[in-house]
Length: 302
Image 1 (cartoon, rainbow, N blue to C red):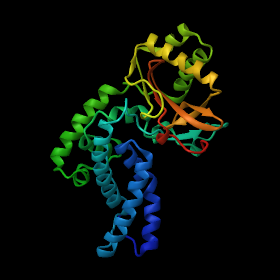
Image 2: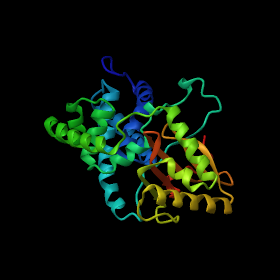
Image 3: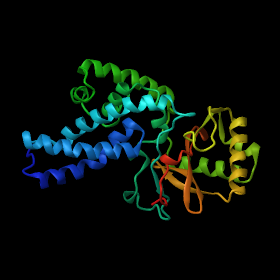
Image 4: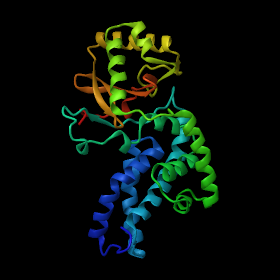
């Protein structure tokens, strides 16, 4: 809200509400936890009110982006200590939405390009907190380096170097080509059909030769403690999940996982697991399975 500023707290609240979706996406991309992102954005509203009383804030979005990013960075640094003690691999918290029966109007939905994609969040976990914050702000959200420097607490030249190092890691860890929704869904359909049919050979054909499967049970739910590598091992692991799921009365349904089609495991209407697929070159390159209860929605998928 650059230029005119805001006159009172009602106007301030209106401006902050308008900025909130972007602020949550920024915090979520830095943290990998949507719940923590919501908390950070809520806390920063109180900071904004206090700051505005002392010195009127002219650019609410700009001020809040820096404040939210700084708070998310501090939260991430603390979270990294906890994640080092985590049982098994730590995966980001997925954001779910139901699959609309009619996709004719894309304006009613969050597209893949508007979401923080799940495979990207997994790659960002390899970065240092400062690298991750610098890259998210500049490369993902287009924040100028002087403002990134304010959020990270470094000089503009230093955050340029952080973002450059992060850029190389991200480029090495994500597919070179963008995958449109039609291609993604076609690969997913073949993957699901092979898994549901128990067809090992067909399932292997849907997987990249270097496919990686990671599962996160949070030390609460049984999951692989290490990544599963290679199409044969990944396919056999997945077919085991299918067999156990059927025995438990579990249903797999399509859902939006961070803007791309994935799967949710349902037991008596409750989400007990989420599967995100990273697709490239007509095959599945990554399979990420989130089973940790505290990363799953409590109620039905909206």
